[in-house]
Amino acid sequence: MKMRAPALPIINIDPYFSLWAQESPLDHLVHWTGSFNTMVGTATVDGEEYRFLGKSYYHRDKKIPTMELESIDADAFSTVIVSKNDKIRLTVKFTSPTLVTDLYYASRPVAYCKVSYEALDGAEHNVKVKFSCTEEFVLNKEGEGRAYSRKVDIDGMTVIKMGNGEQKILHRSGDDIRIDWGFFYLGVVGDAYADNEAYDEMYAVFCEKELDGEALFVFAYDDIESIVYFNDHLKAYWKKDGKTIEEAIAEAVGEYDELLKKCTAFSDKIKAEALEKGGEDYAELLLLAYRQVMAAHKLVVDNDGNNLYISKECFSNGCAATVDVTYPSAPMYLLYKPELLKGMLRPVFHYAATPEWEYDFAPHDVGQYPILNGQVYAENRLEYQMPVEECGNMIILCAAICDAENDASFAKEHIDTLKKWSEYLIRYGLDPEHQLCTDDFAGHLAHNVNLSIKAIMGIAGFSRILARLGENSEAERMMSIAKDYTKSLVKNAANDDGSFRLAYDKPGTFSLKYNSVWDKIWKTDLFPQEFYQGEIARYKKEMLTFGVPLDSREKYTKSDWLVWAACLSESKEDFEYLVHPLWNAYNTMRTRVPMTDWYFCDTSHMRGFQHRTVQGGLFIRFMLD
Image (tube, rainbow, N blue to C red; front, side):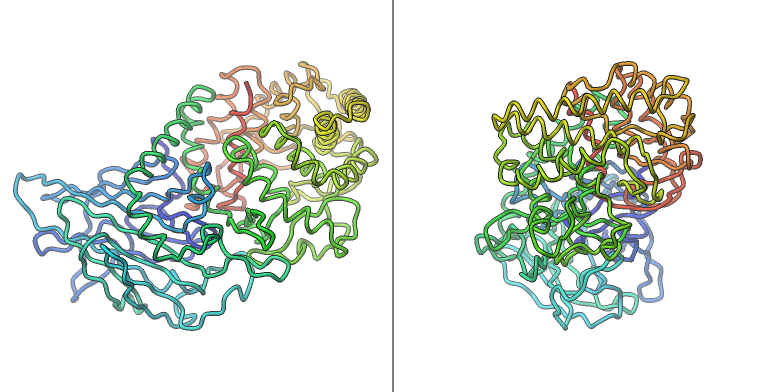
C-alpha cells in the first residue's frame, strides 16, 4: 500500500475489541477511540532484547532498543510489519479474518499474529518473541478497576486470560468508552511461557515463545453477553450453537492456513475489481476501509433466532442501529452479504412497530451502543427528527435488498410499514420542510434539494418493491409520482450553469447530489443526462486540494458522499479525478485515527467522526455496470 494510512488496523473485531497503530506501528497502539490499548512486542535475539511494536519501555534501567522498521503493508484483512536489526529480519503479520461472506467468521472474536524471521548475517540465532498486553484491554482506562489473570488449558497451546475483577456485564452505554467486562485471551501455539507482570504501573499478561522459524499467536475476547435488545441480553452469533471461547480459539488455530487463503483471495478480488473500476487510489481506499467497517458492528441473535447486526455510530454520539449510518454503509453488504444488511434493519422495524414509537415516519436509531431499548437521539424531540431522510433510507435499502437477493420476501414482511413511510414521502418529500437530513451536523435546512432526491428515490424504490410483489398498478402509480417529482425538481432547482442548488430558494448554490446514485444503479432514468453532466461539471469547478465540499455552506466534505457523487460521472477518468483527492487527504492527514469520514477539503484536517461504518459506502462503484 503506497498510502501512508492515517492509522493502521492491527486487531479489528468489533467496537470493543479494537487495536490500531497510531502515528507509527512502533509507537502508540490504541483503541479506535484513541485511548491506549497498550501492547508491546519484543524480540530477544541471542539474549539481547529489541522492541518491534508498541510503546517504548525501560527494563533494569536500560532502554530497550528498537528494531529498524523496513516496511509496512496492508490488505483487507492483514497488516504486515517487517523490522530488522543487524542479525535478523522479523516479519509480523496480524490478521483479523472477519469474512463478510460468512456470518460465523464475521462474528468469531479471534485474531491472529504470525511471526517469522530470517537471518541476515548467515549465522544461526536464538530468537524469542514476546507480546505483553496491559489491563487497558479489559478496563475502560487503566486503574478503573483491578485486572487479574489465569492460565487456560487448550491442547497444543499456551494461553492466558485476563479480566476485570468486577464483572458488570452490559452495565452501561456510551461513545468514548471501552469494554470493562468479559475476558481477553492471549495465546500461542506450542509450549511457551505465559504469566502476568507489571508494565508501566499497569497489570499485564504476556506470552513469550522461542521461534523455530515461526510462531502463531492468537488474540481473542469473550464478552460473555454482547447487546441489550429491548431488555433481553443477547449473545454473539458465534455462540449460537453453544461453542465456548476455548473451543473457538482451538478451532481458529487449526483453520489458520486455509482461512488465510480465503481472506487473501477475497482481498485480491476486491483489489482487482477496484483497480478495474476506479484505479489504484480507489483500490487502496477500499482495502483500508474494509476492516474498519466490519469492526464497527456486532452480530448477535435475538430470542426468536433472527440475526441482528448492530452498528455503533463511532465518535458521533454512540447511537446503535442508526438508520442514516446504515444507509451509507450498505453497499459493501449489498455486494457481499445482504443478510447482514437485513440484520441492521430488523431492530428499526421492530422498534417502529412498538407503542413507544408514536410517529408515522421512521426512527433515527434504536439506542446507544450496546443498549438498544429505543431511540436516544435528541431525546426524541420532534424538531430533531429526520422524517424524510429516514423514511427514504429504509425504503431504498429494502428495495436494494430485493435486487441483491432477487427476492422480495424481506420487504413483504414489512410492507405495511414501508407503505406508510412511502406515503409520508409523497406528502412531504417534494419540497421538504425545515428539518435535518443525514448531514445533521450542518444543521436544519428547508427546501433541501438532495433531501428531495432522497424522497424521490424512496418513492421509486417502493415502486420497485411493489412490482416484485405483483402489485403492478400501484407500482406504476408510485413510479409516475417519482417521475413527476423529478421533473419539478429539475425545473425548480436549476442553476444558470447547468448544476442544481443546495436548496430550492438558494440560486447559485451547490451540493453533492449523492442520493441520485440509485437512479443510475437501478437504471430508472428519472434524471436526464444533463442533470448528471451539470453536477459533475460543478464538482470539478468546486474541487479543492483534498476533495469537493459537501455543499456551499462549508469547506468540509464526507468521504462516503464524495465517492457516491463521483459515481454520477460517465467515465472512469472523471471518477478517478474526483476520488484521488480523498486518497490524498488520508495520505497527508495529521490526525492519526481510523479513517474519518468528515474533513476539510482545503487542509485535509479532520472535522469529526472516526472509525465509522459509513466507509462501507466507498464500495458503491461496484454496484454500477
